[in-house]
Image (cartoon, rainbow, N blue to C red; front, side, top):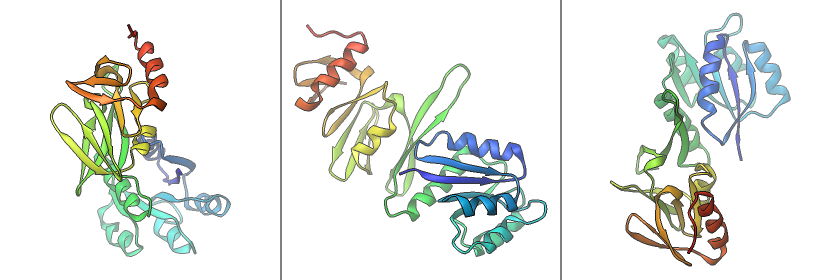
Length: 243
C-alpha cells in the first residue's frame, strides 16, 4: 500500500525538490501540494494523508501552529532553513527535521524513520541518480543497522531466505530482512526476471541457460517450472535464443 504524502511549503522550489525526491519511490503517492497552512488544513479535512512534509516558517500560520491545530495529525517531517526551530519540531513528535537545502541521503534517512514507525515497514527502496545523458538506479537496502546503497547494475541475483533476502554482487553478498516479492516489484522489470520462487536474476548477467537452470557468474541457479516460460520470453527479448 502506498503512503499518501502532502507537501506544505511557501517556496515553490522547496516543494519541487521534495517532489523530485519522492518520484524515486514507487511506494509514495503525493496527494497534495500546498503553499500555506490554511490550504493544508482544508486539504487534510478532505483527504487521508499518511505523511506530511511541513515547512515551519511560513507567512501567517506557521507549520508548528498548523500541527498543533490537528486532532489526528499524520506523521510529520519538518523542513526549514532555520536551525533554531529544531526543538519545536521534536517537541511536537515530528518524525524528523530536515534542514534546507535537503540532500537526497539525508532525505532517505528521514524516510527510513517513517518506515521504522510502520508495522509493515519496507527495508529497501529504489532511488535514482541522473548523470548527464543517463539514469542510474540504486537499491537502498537495510542491512543490520545501516542503509546500504547498491548500484542495481551490480546485482547478479537475489536469493530468498524465507523472511530474508540475499543480494549478490560481484564483490559482496548483503542479507536483509525483506520478502523477495517486495524486491521483485521494486526492481526495474526490463533488467531482472524471476526464475524461481527463491531467485531473481539480472538478465544481462545470464551467461548460459538450460531447460531448468541458468548460469550467472559461474553459479548455476535453478529455474522453476512455473517461471520457465516467462524467463524464455524475456531472454529472447534480450536477443538470446535457445538451441
